[in-house]
Length: 285
Image 1: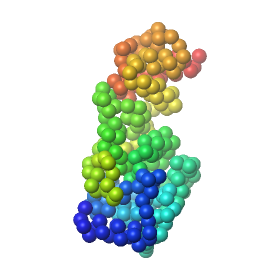
Image 2: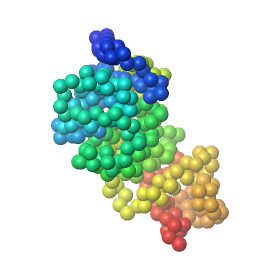
Image 3: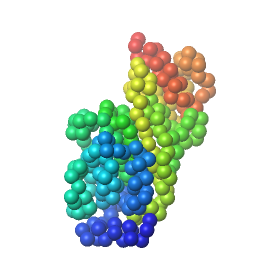
């Protein structure tokens, strides 16, 4: 980050008397090259409507507006209104709503946009996983998610079965999308500087990836598989389905899964097969 950019952001915030809130976990980006890199590597173009969650001081918003068709922004902190009004003055392809996106109805948010769109977000780390899974499970129009996350979360999102980082969020995303790590972002790129490094990941939807699968039972199966990483898949499923282990072992054999396997060893293909058998044996009787 150059000195002039750092000074510019701080002067903007100081001008409006803005104070960073621990409650909202705010860390802003101002490096122009990084912001442009996020937009370009994310695939934003003049045909792309963008939903931005967590507009902050509007530094990313401003770059998005230069490249996107339109930017629909959500910002929870109303004290940023004068900062955003100043920073985005004269920009016409942008509309900021000062609300908590997590309290909004997904259908209403997507009706507002009215067409396929891309989600772009630089969020406090405590809310990133809930945001990702909300859009993975409920969105019908989102085509891509380009999001700044804590480095270890990026590793989980982009992991593969059998690795230590692989977990419920990985398998959940893999049902309807694929993910890719785009940019590594050191902590020094933020104001104020957080305690961890970050990464930008891109999640691209493919809602026809597993046609015919019962998404609810798939997700319930995945959640159950990771109830306790210390336990085998068999034990976790028996706890969820409230049945004896012998029946679960038979189910695993039908799915061609080792009865001693653990949840983190199963690919999304295996979870689809397993959840389909569970649906037939436990929910269609």
